[in-house]
Length: 101
Image (cartoon, rainbow, N blue to C red; front, top):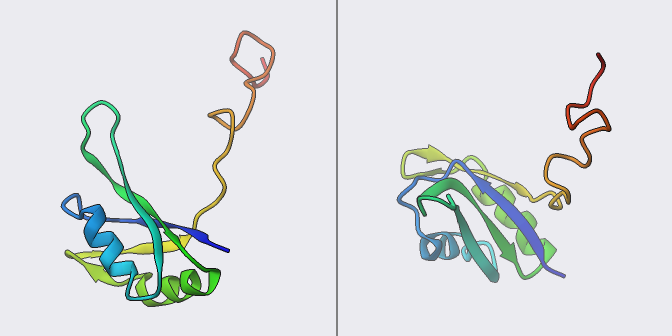
């Protein structure tokens, strides 16, 4: 069973190939994706790596969380499932404002 990892605090120069290579030190990598801005296409400083097994994922977290890459300490942890609905669900029934008056 695979595991998806969040990788934060990436240098804007880091490529998906470098990310894949780095995480392959811990085990088999299924995919590596750096998230980019939709308008500009510029990297946003974080990405996701899917490891082939949960064991490899845990090994990657222990090996790479806090490791200094390109002058930045990586933040590596298990990715949380993506929330559906954008901003945590509905906005309430008062003209989209929510809250109390």
